[in-house]
Amino acid sequence: MRYPGEVWFLPPDAREEGDPKPRRHVLLNACDEADPDGVGVFAFASTQFTEASFGAAYLLFDPAATSYGQRGNAGFTRATYIYPCRLVPAAITDFQRMMGRLIDEITEVRLRLRQALGFGMGTASSGLARGSWRGRIVQLAGLLAAEIDSQYALVVTEAGYSNHQRYQTVIPLLDGGEWSPGPGDIVIPAGAAWIERALPELESAFLAVPEVFSAFHPSEIVRDTGAVVDEPLIEEVEDTLRTFFGL
Image (cartoon, rainbow, N blue to C red; front, side):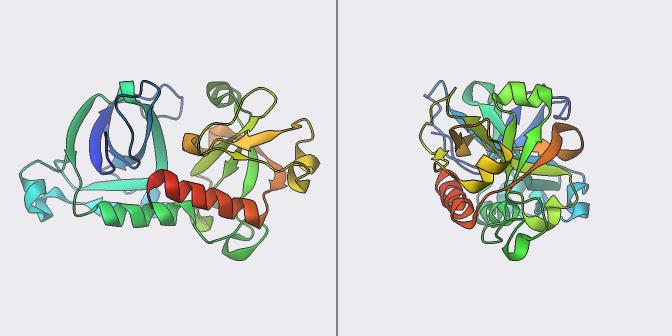
């Protein structure tokens, strides 16, 4: 098994807005390395303050401040921003090299992940997230849509950071007529008003929660469809994300 807190080098991201070089990332979910179809979801790590300057959730980890970090066991050699606001999925086969593991800080990383996902904030139509992008169904750019086999996704980014339109954390909305839901997926109830109004072409659909990732808003999100999910559904999504990430 691979466990949250492990620090791995991942290969360069093939997406246009992805990272063009190998980089350390922090694993956020437990995953079975013996499963050839297993996927890990990682927090992006950078020495730059960029996303933090837009109000993103982050943890600044300084290896010099911990004894195990000084010994090189934490996986980082200099102060680094851990960004759970920018989620990067990777197949088990793309885990290139484990560099170490965060131990004392993993609890704080989990708290920052909860913050980045906006738990309890509601949606663009209600609650603390009113007027933000959280809970909206967006259309994805062509290349990204082809990569994940879906044109649409649900935004789950926390409200404040979402409004800066940087990296939006999204969950693919898949056509139930083409794909079958798997473990951890959420089937959209038949007759849901928000989907019938904005996306009538989808006679059935489900949210592929374990495929959660972050998209760069300026180039990878084409438009807001006008659909906002209801409160019971966003709460179910939050519960499923808690289980997936062990929060």
